[in-house]
Length: 393
Image (cartoon, rainbow, N blue to C red; front, side, top):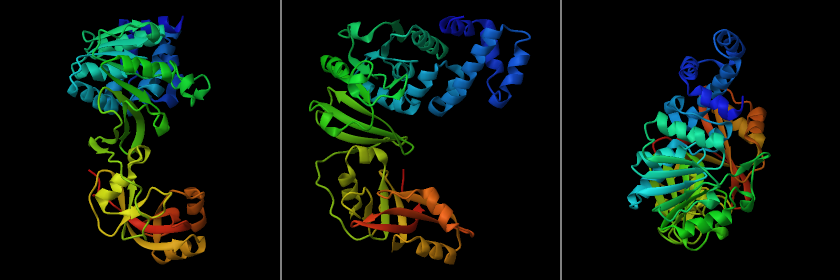
């Protein structure tokens, strides 16, 4: 049975019954479960259902409980957009007045689903027959088939002129893992940019590590994090040429570049701020520092320090109690004196691994502390403190 035939069999009443029975199964018991199910169902169908059940469990991290109603491929789980990010992007396109989108390289349809839920009609295009069929099944399963047309085709052959906007998510993984050369994407980044330029509006999903100098002048670049983890960068066409922004989900807080110079280096104050990864990727640490009335602890380190606590969605705050030159013996003695047993170790600009620190100092006691391994004015330094829990929104 081919992969496509096996997937189609899952859409039959028998396949649906199997999937429903496997919703909460324990993968550690897979052999016993498979043996039991094969008494009443074809072995190939049982294998396909078990595979889909595993994928659904993995996909919950991106799609929440709704993953149990959806369908996936291994690559689809790996490469699809997290639902929160797709929803944000779709809402932004809707706010721009977009009513129809050509979703090129649509994969299993995660972005198409978000666009349709925003009330946008979507042409979802993928060249892989199985992936296209999975996207079609997802549109049907979630009641969005009327807004989503799925087409199995080469995206380079699609006429996008009838659509208000184009969304392109080039494949950045191959048979050997992640692809770092943008021209090795499928389709190449240069083609995706040309397609974006031809549309009235466009959003091009790219890796968050894209060098800033490669961002075209006519594009707006936005880095998006979700729950503190940087998920992607988007090049927007037809919005604000040259703009740079960092958007933090789930709050939706957005920091926009103002062309500020690098902040001045100053001594470590009472508070240390660790900017969100999207802020750092967008090169907006200076903008965050200005809001905090702070400076850098080192010209090469993205830690901001200030004497006062300023609530901000753009950084995590720590109250600093001690500043020591890097010395494990002194750190161990200080932690023993304060009976610190719960030790969080963070690092930026240090080659020392956090696990090595914990192994060497052997924390023990009822109290907690955070150690930040970093550089202060060029010197290896240990900053000891505690997180300020109420600073993020």
